[in-house]
Length: 130
Image (cartoon, rainbow, N blue to C red; front, top):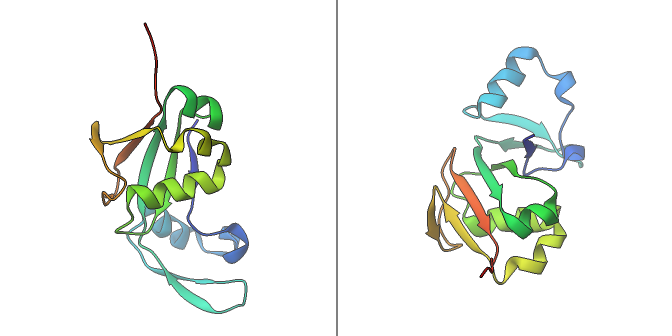
């Protein structure tokens, strides 16, 4: 099961049920800018988003209860931005945060790496064996 967590809070946006089917399809495609109402009823521009698939391994999988998740992030987000979003949604990940490594599209990367649409970010906690 893949879970998608958008960057914005659900209470900040108008209900998708209120939008037309065409608007919903366009927004899901991610290439369209739309206006959404914030909690103070101001309209703001949102999108386009990038989708990043995050893979959890070993202890990270145990702490989140998931094998993977898809995050919607603004363009030019870094791996650090993605980790901040994950730590906000899964605070137990803090346990391994200082000792884990990140791999982007199967290559180790620092948190300062800029993410692109459809990237795959793996969270790899320390693993011991013998």
